[in-house]
Image (cartoon, rainbow, N blue to C red; front, top):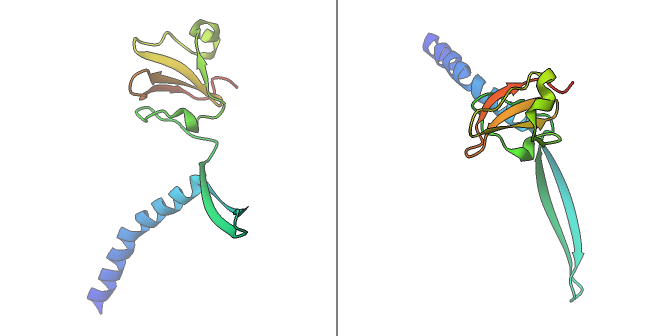
Length: 124
């Protein structure tokens, strides 16, 4: 009986982080199912169901992540960082540039898209 109880406890301890991660991944996207109804020339009616998956609009960026502009809210490339010195922006190192994602300023590598720095709330 003790062995069974210990085995159940170990299984629960292993499975709980996996279940929490699955729940988090489910919350990270917005699934929407659409139905498309078409009439073909021969008079047949075709019903197609599609699931459209869109990421949440708000994204938290972290240093070291790969930046993808599709997930950025009101994406804007900051061409002249000097205009934003009062907002803590500094000269980007060679090979980097500043972009705006929502209220955050993100320092992104030009070639790989890796994030070098994130200034949260820079545009509040």
